[in-house]
Length: 128
Image (cartoon, rainbow, N blue to C red; front, side):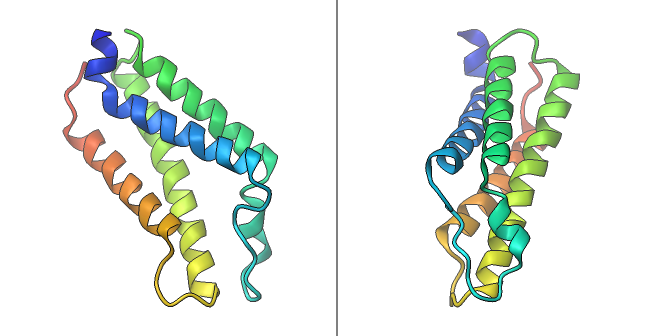
């Protein structure tokens, strides 16, 4: 329980990543296809990406809940989470720019805040 309390942010981030993968796995074509959007944008919610997200989310949760969450593991987890959430932020941003939307959709805003939160937690969190 002590490790969960100290690393609660990383557990929450792992759950968010796992739930994003689960959402992509359960929802067929979560990212819709506006007319001028590049084709690769609609491919990132296919089952291989969803399975990868669920594996990463599970890994982050399990390592954050144990005493194995050392500085090197924290660096790997930070890199993986920043890569994934920045990637999806860019994908959702491309989707919004090429689509007929006047303002960014909630997916773009939420992923942007998650990227900022992961960066701030990586810089200012206590080392366990």
